[in-house]
Length: 337
Image (cartoon, rainbow, N blue to C red; front, side, top):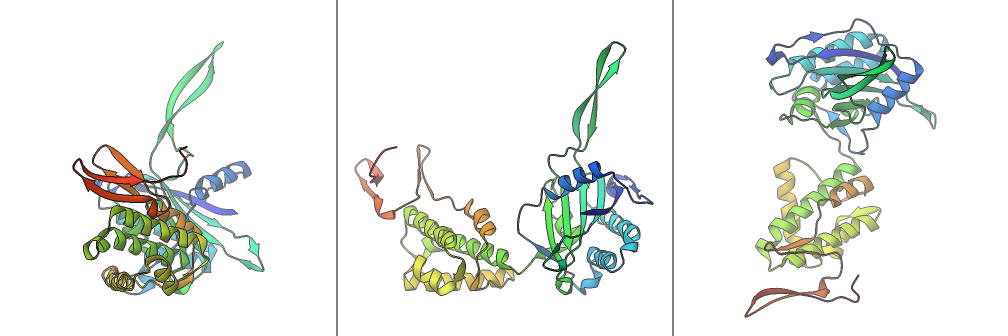
């Protein structure tokens, strides 16, 4: 439940725009409070979570430090909200970053199984949408055009949950308006990295596997596009059918060939070293991560500019060959729909 909210105006210092700080909280009525809660929270649909980090000590991360102070003593809410706004204003180095309203909120968590987790929301609105105001004018009505904040989509936001403080809190983040600067919100302002949880391991395993199938496999083994499509389909089916991921079970069931398994193992090790991550070989599969990653697992064979073959099923129903007319694919099916 929304308990506290304060609004600051953060301009772009590179463009010589100002920072305007509120000196007191905004106190919405119940109707406005409900509208703001819905607007701020509905954009956070993904289960992907992040955590604050620092190149030195965690307390040197300004947002982590301010959040810690607010959770410890909510009476510091206004003071720390000003520190957050000043930090955002100070890190703006790109003239394309838009000015906007910065809403800082304190949410009281609902008690579940005897545990209550409060959270802090930091939300920035940048884009202004046109709208019409209709008002009486004499014995008729007049229309006036104006601009304001659209409630359709939040531009930028993060929710900091009062849990896992020692490792940098659990944080949900969105940025729907990068506007030419993909580092401004995630890296320069918040300085967050993805949390080491089931979502992360599901996502990373599917990512490295897809990269292996599409890039490395064709270089080492004689494989067709149809073979690659089958490998991609089998991996997604595995993740959708299983609740728990086991590396040995996955490689034996999906890759099967010992030489391919060894190649994938080497590729995965190189990937972890290059990306500086450690991907678990035993974890609970996160359905949300599978759903998101599966959108990129498009098993499509593109043939010149004429045809595309979508492969969803049995690889044995597709044959590849060539004759005097050129290369071809032969497809077998039971019924035409």
